[in-house]
Image 1: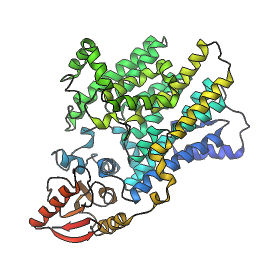
Image 2: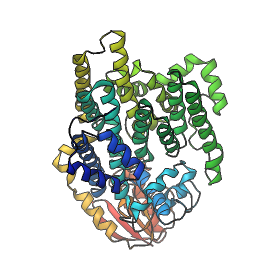
Image 3: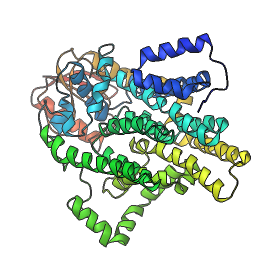
Length: 501
């Protein structure tokens, strides 16, 4: 099926060649296919979205709003890959009492991060991760556009794609530095769009790649298998289910321990059971208790409602939502507040699924109403989806971009820049959570926390509470304790201090 409305020009052909040179060949071919005929417009949307995401992240890095946990952790791991060495993270290893050679794959099994290593040969530093994440998030747009265009037409495709680009889960992920979720929207969009196009082989390749994003991505693949199974492709659906569940077990029980990690590190369900079989039993035998856990406290309900609302709740009318259900349950049944709330990056794992499910849900509703050809309803829903995304902008991360002060370093940030400049390259340094990213490219950064690490240099901000401290007073006491054991203060301004042993 062609997506072309205009003749292909020489300039478009040149754009195809540039795309092919900039990206891996299979991905370049798929994007070129998705954009055929609408390449300039969709390409502009991709570039605009990537620019916004990168600007948000890079300005936060420049103004000392980025954080060591988790930007420095990923920076250290990818740097290891780029040097053809183990992806170690000294910052994470020390906090886990695993030493400075801790392999980051032992925390979250994300070997796909190795794909970012070549970019470190161009620019070695955390800014590379921020830009890479921005581009990856934006590259999901062509596939979401193609999926929507095929079901609802061109105007809806642009409106839904814009809604995704402005969506609050992407805003929160882009604001929270970098995480492995960067790969998820693109790969999920490829899976869904290629399956809809009847290209099961490409869909399966994208699913395999998704498994390499994180150890729990097998749950998403299994959820996708449940959807495929319901569409009457029993063998294919069953294969996705087995592949997803099998990989989850393999990654958690064998691969993570093989690199020195603890598979129980992120087990957050002791209030329900001590292990997976016990959790399944609890869900089957104490269903009302589990439902109660899903809905309390209210933060969980608020997050789930906000995840569904950008599609005007029509995602609930599509079996495609089954793909997101395991990940949503993983979050909402846990005992960890930062998994439930809308902050951070967790909702970006499922945002593309729910938008595609919303599109599919509308098609199904129109079929039930016997109004499949009603372009007015399609346009009204698409405009509504885009309007919801816009109305949510002031509540989430993109709102910062319209405030001039966001782009300026305040007095504290100026002092922070002066402080980190005093630390020589190549040393080990304990750095406050907001100070580590500025040092990570040229030093070995450890997190400044409650325990002295005997690093020769310490940079801390004692003017405000920073993770993992509960108050600024706790940080000042730590600095005073270091001075008592022989550190000397070589810089002190705006609450930012530099100590040298």
